[in-house]
Length: 309
Ligand SMILES: [Zn+2]
Image (cartoon, rainbow, N blue to C red; front, top):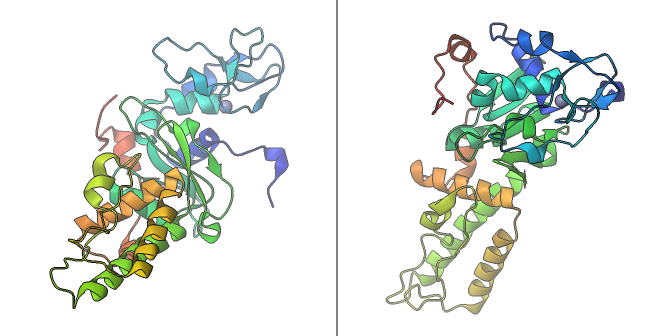
């Protein structure tokens, strides 16, 4: 049961709760150098209520801030409204804006403490998707440089694994993923390839299929993969069975009608399979281990972030 008096957990409050477990980052200024709200208002970022007299930060955003469209237009006497301290911290704290632009933050079911996984690489991302933290959980990943994402993320309040449903922020877009369903589709591709190989085995000059959805095409842009199937009707492939062709058509149609998030996941799973030289995707998923963000490095400035911003 959710405690409604606590309000909706925002990504900024999750980040704050996580960072409170790792003292050493200088977050105090965001909680001390504040102004008092001159009237009851809402945070321009997360929408939490800020009562008259409570602390906030005036919403001055420079022209270089390209994410203004993600803020609420609360107006009010204090120029364009106030940020709550947590959101100001999530946007303004350098380490947060760097490291937590590729992150999953949620609750570790064993310890009940907040934990953060990195989702920088393909393996990290898949590990976090298939072995997610418990709710409340937020997962975001930036898709271009100088993009800060954690405060824009959608919080998952449900059990992602049990419900096979995940909100994930890929760059500026929120996408929906169904991890188990996608794993099933990737396995279906292997099953169909196997059926094709068995079908063409006795046929002369028939080459069969290695891939229905070629990875080189999926890889063109992993954030928005294009799903162009191999030409399985070509005489070169050698399929003469209409029923089998109809199964292939149906498969391609189902994958193409997947959500954008599922397409991203599909492309990542297939690409990792090629890297790892395996087509046993269930085993591949079982072997994934989420990687925790190394907070010692973040606190001591030896961050392994791919860029310094
Ligand atoms: Zn806020």
